[in-house]
Image 1 (cartoon, rainbow, N blue to C red):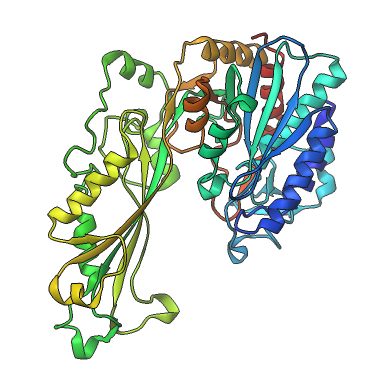
Image 2: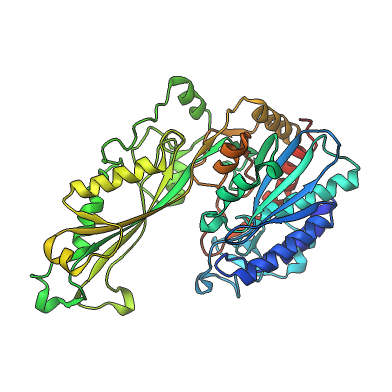
Length: 473
């Protein structure tokens, strides 16, 4: 494909722009790059203002009267800790090949002219999700060269705050329903199935976050003087958290899974998705998996309860012999379509109260500290809800046909992704069916140091998008 080599160069240029949404000046550079790239390909662009970073909508009409495909792409990336990357800078693109011992060695960028599909590009957002952006642009370039046009019009919405939870997206969608109206929605995001074959995902869990804090003495105390006397908030927090799950990973909070019913037809669909537990144990270096359900696909149909981080006192080089003043857990809850975020948060709060805690949404006062032996502050944020689309509806059949034509094999169908993408506002406000088309390699280290994309996946991603853009509605 002629577009591949030029695509690598534009990919490198886009990856070189820092894209942490906490830094508006960097996001502004990304917006300029995106607008220029789409306008150079015949799209008109408009910024949709929000209370944070604007969304960019790129549109190209090929027909006066035709259906419209809305495409969602994410531009921002996770924050970086440069000290944990095995290269000079996470925004300085590195081309690497794997050594026999599993390590990766950098090579001159010029080698990409004769690339090997197994080589990888290492940079922040290589997979999540600037890769899909330049795949899409390259597919549009291929359409131009082949003198082909889709039989539908295109709208592309670009999100610059996805890694912040897209806090301003729902309101923006509601305010701009007419502008964003479309017949189908495709999301180019996320990794393929572990077999790395063409994949379609028909839903995603939503996400909500909770901060839970327990309290001890007003300031840290010397553990020699007060180690047997001042209650330690870390032990309180540990007992509280351990009461939420059994030893096999099932949530013990009453009613937490109520509403999720997997009938035999659904279980049959889930069983058709390939899964090799022994290989996954090898990859993750685990002896067992949690027992929320009988297999992985069934497990992600239920809401999760995850401790994503904990802190109390000091550790490592800064460790101190103290009784901490507080202990804190950061929790994320992956949501499913059948259960609202508000209900799950309410159940968690009631559980904390049932364990004997006074639950506040702020720091306790002096009088509250002196009156109640167990105090917890709990604050929460709902980012977005879950969505799910029928596998065999018109959108599902259309995409299955496109990928079969492109790769001459049936794509792997996944009812639900365990991860979260901010699509529910589009599905609910615009009443448009949505399907995710993942393209990148699963072992891409997204959100982590040394994020990467396999070049074979990148090239097949262009092929995937081209197949979709040339499939009749």
